[in-house]
Image (tube, rainbow, N blue to C red; front, side, top):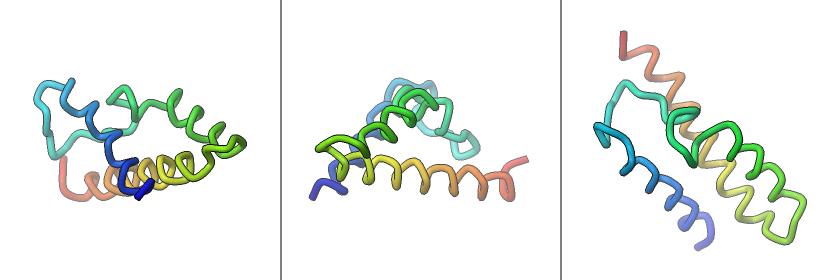
Length: 75
């Protein structure tokens, strides 16, 4: 359930204009996908909220994989 709740981090996409751009990498662009927030998610691994940190980092990893794959399709 906690891992599913970490998908709420994608709510920051609603602040972007346009909301969805298939060729935009969310890592480093959206507020909750910034490198500073990723550092916070790493720090969560050393607290009682480590499950949340693991879920958020897994989310960032899958978004990063998506960014790598976009290079293949977007020019």
